[in-house]
Length: 310
Image 1 (cartoon, one colour):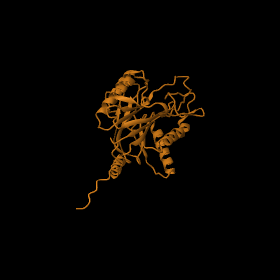
Image 2 (cartoon, helix red, strand yellow):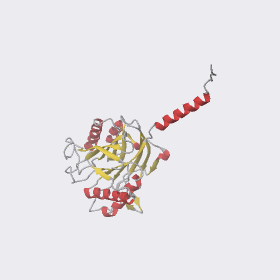
Image 3 (cartoon, rainbow, N blue to C red):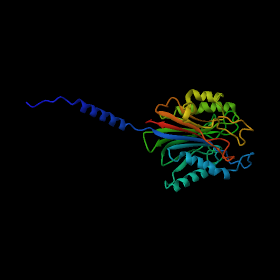
Image 4 (cartoon, helix red, strand yellow):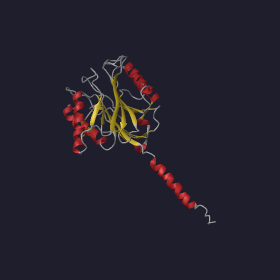
């Protein structure tokens, strides 16, 4: 009978470690996504003191978007955008991408709020088709009749929400919903009921996590914010210290807050119920004034989120 040797425990330990390492390597790395929101100010042909025409502001707005989204999968939410402003921004982004030898890929979802086509302001979601597949999109109005162009409650103007369901091309297992809106600046009831409608719509969509962005025209002490915070996390409250960057306020006006005080009215939110697998890594309120030149009366807001398999 041949010699029987006991197992080498050190070898077994190495094998175990290798197996653990292989298991760790098999775990997918979370997808890092940037959400960028900006009220760019509509093309006002009778500019206020300190305000410049769109022809002068356009390159600053487009450059900010491209610089802040160029090297990370991103979703861009804009407000107060007229049709020619939107097509101009997309043209600028694709031109910059072509110069970088990446080819055209930028496009948008959304319609004009006045007629559901091209009239009136858009709240578009701009994204890159090299990064995302569009699974589905929809526009609905913030009113008692959300399926048709309409004003809601005591609103002064038509207001819309644009929703997209996106699938990552880098990691097709990652799906996200993104909502973009601009709540009414006059209607107190409209702002409250609009938030309720957005929450209701989001809850009935699908099982994927939802991110909300836009100009909510309310501060944190007001009722619509409180209602939203019951169902959603304000991304600004989810990071601290070195992971927060930039300014405190998102609205500036065109005169350093002299006519109307600076305040926070632009937000990025994460739906609480479906937030598993999402982690807000950083939050920033970016610059909008360059050498005393205002590109808008709002500052852009950007949030970096890591997303595990959804």
